[in-house]
Amino acid sequence: MYIIAYDVETPKRNHKARKVAYSFAFGGQKSVVEALLNKNEMKEVAVRLSRIINLEKDKVHIIKVKKFLYLGKAKGITFKRGDIIV
Image (cartoon, helix red, strand yellow):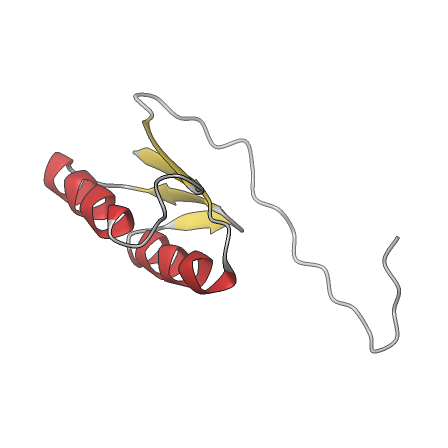
């Protein structure tokens, strides 16, 4: 399993990076994605993201996780129109 985390400066590049990362994802939240990748898929993600990001301004980290443990899943929360979250 790999963790793909990105911090991309412009909305346009951020959207493109998100599309690439989430196309390989099985889970994630905002700009951190969990992806079950083999070595070739990991390289493909890296190549595709490197074509999108600005190497001087943006950051992408692809981290291999050898062992992982699921501690649970966040519960969905529903909100009514007009609810304010503080």
